[in-house]
Length: 164
Image (cartoon, rainbow, N blue to C red; front, side, top):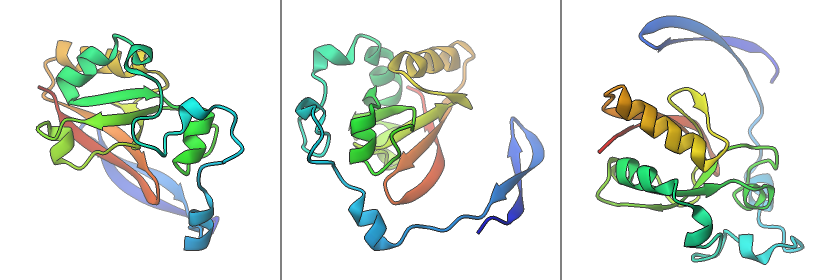
């Protein structure tokens, strides 16, 4: 842990090398302990129970382009939800609350509880950010949007999702 390794990749069509810092993966026991905090004050944010979380009215109209183009419904990531999903409280992004199985996102395995950290290499901190990324991608006639997704127990991954 702590050593740096070079990783060769292609970004925006150009080859580049980045440095990654080797870390230690938590043990299964440590991962299992990162669960919902029963002492949390806001029961409406208990994301561990299906149907809980912000209501449809609280999700806002910005979800429209996201649902139509990506087949996803999302809500803002709060510190309480981040803890419930095994992430750190300072993680920024939006949380997937539902996936249309007939969408490319559904076909590629995106699921409820996934955290979208970026879209098109732009950080996503609000539902409006993701909606803007979708709108921009469509305006640029892109066929897909590259999402950076964090899922509990799995390293962060990039997932291209076709726009519809």
